[in-house]
Length: 597
Image (tube, rainbow, N blue to C red; front, side):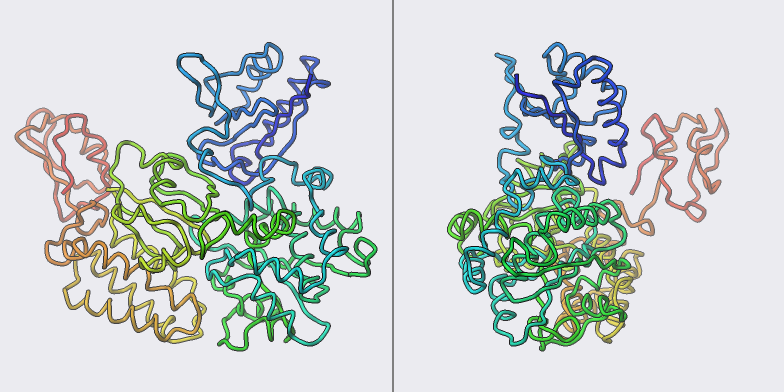
């Protein structure tokens, strides 16, 4: 009989849901049932379906239990492991209504259209056990390049694969490596950009939490390819689990001689260290990141020179993000043609997205390039919950734009999204429904940009703040059509004149919402109404006094004492001057006589 493996997600999301207690509970219950020789319990990385965590995967049965609580453990152990009857009420898997047969987890709607390359070991191995990584062909690619390939051959494979940077810019990875290889000198560096700062993005964090050795191995391969011997992983300090697992993984690799001197007896030396960032969004820009590593304030520099020519400490440097590195070993093992065969002609391979917002299945999704936005949102994501109408999807975070229903059949690719006024970005994908105000969405992203701007150049420092002021005036019902015209002109000016990619792309959410949802801006300006009922300054709550039951429930819940009337005698009404638009009265009324306008 094959041993049962209980794989408990120990990523950040599930850890918040007490997955650590689940691990202890499973081990205790399995021991008490005398099943310790038949069942083992392991912690793993993210399984992807973050919205229903903590998740527990059962191997070899290919069953995932969702939203597992400590009190569920005894039932799972007794029914599934002892009696052989899976607990269907907790299962993610779909079952056939006629045969009651449980479908393979990979055939469920969430997973069936996914293809895991960057996430290939996440949720499968213990991220703190290097033996499990090695058992899944870990460090095989590094051994291959060190013993069988010349540096130029490695670069040629990456170029032929068509891999483009997954951090947002989409620059060809192999070409970047070629530039660094061509640079003279024997002091060069490789850097992993793990400074993931987009709101709602957690792809890189999950890879480092679930499969840290994939990044370490890839950085060693990159170092060999360009002639470097030292590297840095620049990661934000707000990722404590990822940081600890990286530290552990680096220590394990050093013990086995996979980092350090004379790796695989080939004479190649490579070591790396972790550098913690302070959470500045601008440090995701590569020249600002370099400044931070050097101990300076993280502020972008004009390019050229590019880091491949003059990077950290003034030496040739390549910088790739976590997801880009997570593809490298798989490309070396399976070949450039294999990777090129996935995706589209100009965007090969897969892309990981953090799917969030108004979506049924929140979590990490990795799909082949060329998959449509509609497939991701409706088939994998399950569409908007509570039968709400889909309104838009924001891709690319603060640097991206909003796409509408009519654009959902667009194949996902670097160039395709840019043509529509958005971008791939690092992989944030926020779904918005009918209850979202698009002017408020633009204001949210601009507020983020203003807060995160380094202040080095005036277009970003002054221009984005002025854009935020204009957006706030529109949300408050104080804007005019001249305000809207000024907003558009200023947005285009900043795009053309800002120093770095942060400032140049900052106006994108504003320009895309004006283009796609101009009617909402006009409603705020001309009608002084927020169609989605989000902007408080434009809201009003009114009581239909003819239908009022005179019960006083609304008045008791009003924190501003803005509702007047007499219990059982005089209908209640709202003093609009005192009303703070909190909505408590609407929630309190059981009779539907209060409306929000």
